[in-house]
Image (tube, rainbow, N blue to C red; front, side, top):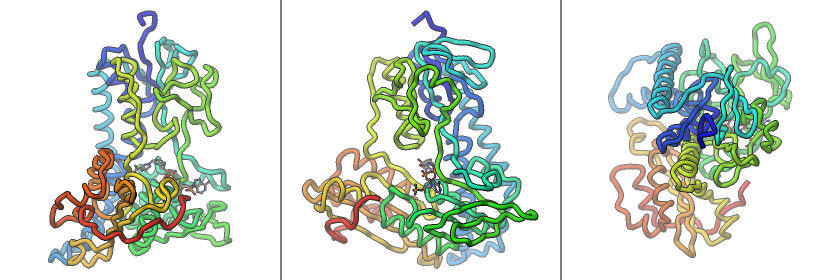
Length: 459
Ligand code: NDP
C-alpha cells in the first residue's frame, strides 16, 4: 500500500463519494477526494434537500386555504420568491460547509478542481499528479435535454432553484420524479403550470392506481396536465416564449423546464483511456463490489445502473469502505428499495406494483385498496383523497408491495419498508394494532381484499 500516495482517491464529492471517503478514512485508509463544483453533489445542492424545502414552501398555499375551515382567517397571503430562493441557498451553503468539515475531520485530503484519471492508479487534479491503490469514480449525473429546436431557451431543475424571477406561466416537460415534483412546487407558489408527458400515463414504474390518483389530484388542484403530449420546438419571439406541440398547438408561456431524465457525467475524465468499459449511455458496469473492468477503478452512485437515489448511493459507499478497508466484504441488496415522490400529494412505495407482482407471481394475488378523505379534510373542505394499497401473495401470505398517495406517504412507507424487509405477511399486518386516529392505521386494518388476481402486466 505504501507505494501509493493514497489508498483511495475519490473523484466526486456527492453523497456516494463523501460516504465512501469518510468511512474509508475512519477504517484507517489514507483517502483523498476531489470535487470541482460543490460538496454534497446533486442531492444537497440541486436535488433532494432544496427540492424538499421548496415543497414545504409551496404547500403553505393549500395550508392557508385549509386553515379557514378550522376558524383561522389568515388574510390574503402573499409570497416572495427571492426570500425563499435566498434562504434556501444560505441553508445549502451551510450544508456545504458541514460536508467540508466532516471530510477534514475524518482525515481526508480535499482537492478542489476537476480530476482526471491518468492510468489505473493515477489521478491528475490541478497541477498535481497523485497515485492511489484504488480510484473511486463517483461523479454523478446531469439533467438531459433532448435535441429540439430552441433547446437553448429551456431550463432544467438545476436552474429552477436559482431563477431570477418567478414566472407567471410555465411548461414542464417530462413525467418522472422531477417533473411531477416541480409541477407541484411551482403550482403551489402561484405559477400557472402546464405539464406535458409523452405517454398515456406518467410515473412509469409506479403502481397504476397511484399514478391515476395523482393525475386526478394534480388536475383538481389546477395543474394543466397533458398526456400523449410532445414538444417539437421552443421559440423566442419578441420576448415571448412559445412551446410548440407536435399537434400544432402553440402554448405561450414564460418558462419551459425540461425534466426528461439525467445522464452520467462520465465523459472526459479519462475513463475510456484508462480502459474502463462504458455503456452507450455513459453508465459504467460494475461487479457486486463496484469494480469496473479495470480492477483498481471502482464506480458507484448515479453513474452505475440501478436506482438513482441518495440512500442507495450511501449504501454503496458504505459497502465499498467496509469491503476495501474493514475486511468485511459487503454487497448492496437492491430488493425492496423504498422511494417517495414529493408530488402534491406525495407518493411512496416499497416492493412490487400490482402489475409487476402479476408478471412475477401470476394470478395468485390479493389486492387490498383503501381510498378515503383524510380526517383533516372533513373540516378543511379540501377534496384531496388518500389511497393506500397492499399487494399480497395468496400462497405465502407475504406482502409483496405497499403503495400510498397522501400526506406523509414517505414517512409512513419508510416504516413499512422495515416490515417488508423482515418478510412480513398479511397476518402480521393484521395482528398489528393501529395508532388512532391516523391515516397509517389503515395499513393494518384492511380486512377484505378489494380484488383477487391483478389487472394488467407491467409497462
Ligand atoms: P425520470 O427518469 O424519473 O423521468 C424522466 C421522464 O422524462 C420520464 O417521464 C420519461 O418518459 C421522460 N422522457 C425521457 N426522455 C424523454 C424525451 N426525449 N422526450 C420527452 N420525455 C422524455 O427522470 P427525472 O429527471 O425525473 O429524475 C432523475 C432521477 O432522479 C429519477 O429517476 C430518480 O431516480 C431521481 N430522483 C429521485 C427523487 C426522489 O427520490 N424523490 C426526486 C427526483 C429525482 P418515459 O417514462 O416515457 O421514458
